[in-house]
Image (cartoon, rainbow, N blue to C red; front, side, top):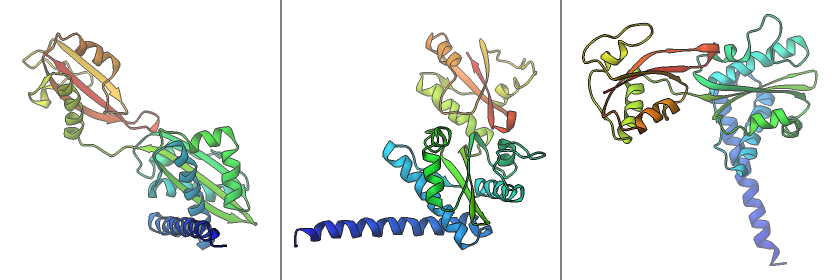
Length: 265
């Protein structure tokens, strides 16, 4: 009998750890925007949030963090599904997902959505993990945030998971420093007035001196890397100095896209 005690203690420790994590999820939901949901709906949403990260963990994927704006977008859509009495990613007259997400103030480069209606949260997560497109969303390595809303109606839990890869809003100066650090790491001296590079934004001719040997303009949703064409030009070692400028960011199709200019000398 004594040999069973360690196993029993381990089992109890695991249960306590799981319960503690669930309670933290519940607290996070109340703080992030779950107050629109009643207590039962909050518990179901917290369970789905916990299950999502438990599914990602063994696959060495970064955990999703709970986002208030995404939760708001999910809640609005869950309420619409209840009113319509059916599941749909877009109802007549309703904006598409990326627009609904942008309307809450989110800056992102990728979005995805899971929907379901079942009596319990465990049934919902089980359904998602056994459905290839829903599973792909849950395990997408590009995604870093989620908002989950649950609305109960006629004994069914209408659940919405809105995922995104969120961007931290960056000022023009921050964008320029980010790109400048990449150029410096590749042996270029980055100095000069960024206003000179910005003068080349859009259709401006940018004829201020000194004239660069090459002007590169590019769009990117990820400033942590240079575009291939820039890498190729720099690799030739024909240029030794650069000036970086950030143009106003654009939002094609709702996604945040940075517009950059690099002057090479």
